[in-house]
Length: 429
Image (tube, rainbow, N blue to C red):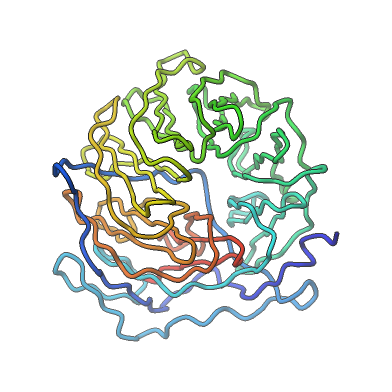
């Protein structure tokens, strides 16, 4: 089989800065609020590590393609939020300004399982790492040009999940990946790019995983949600990037999503996991006992779904949000400094694959973005557990959602990927 780098078609090269480009605002379409008893819940998400990506060149020898067409500067791009008129296109994001551009196609490939992004070559620009059937495909970024590098093989299997983070304590991002045959792999970043992946002495197939300092020792750890054994596997990091098993508490079902956050305000990261069972699992850690969390479960739709954490109601306590693929809803649980409070459902009415959260309109409230089969649905947080459903953005055949500041303008961009390739929504305030 030819390497994936020969099968990648780059459709656009993005400039590092889109100064003056006017956005294409997506107007609010309706309001979503609490239902049933009227009890409120709220959500937000911390963005794990760094995430970012873009395309490369038309083919391996043709050089950089021209930048994609964006709406012309000076166009009428005013929008309203909270009754105050705001204008897009002046290069400065004002509170309440939501200026999303149409999606830009970055690369196209029919073999893509997951992706993440980080600075894997230490040049200060965000690069992309794609999980493929051949291994890890790095796409590096320098001076606004994206270059498809050689695929780094993962022996005799397919990479399913990939995450970027600084495992060995230097200033360059590394990569953790899992395959579909009980393997956990690690590849260090360097000034020369991503090094050859090596398999760790850990046998597990992850349905999902996340990176964070679980044991508060200053090193990045890995939390794997098992796709087979129904456990959460905690792997402790070290100064040299070696991973050591800390514990593997049982949650009983295959994991479909994992998120981290300090839910009980003890300055230790806790774990939230979704499974194929009708429950959401929360693992709260006590100091100095990373392998022995206190487990709790909450009613949740069964089946595939993603999860995230963050402070959606602005009370200083992290909350939890889960999307459900079957019902097309977002369920929000309010955090109460330990156990979660009551939940509320928001109807999004799409077969949701993934969810992410951030303050997209710079108004101090954490918003939501939900990814369906063929579209991204933004939910603007308007306070008091009220969300404005903004116009969906078409993103064909996507199942992966990431956030990153791709153009270094201080505004998070949205990246989606799947069988339809990789696309980016680049806000232009």
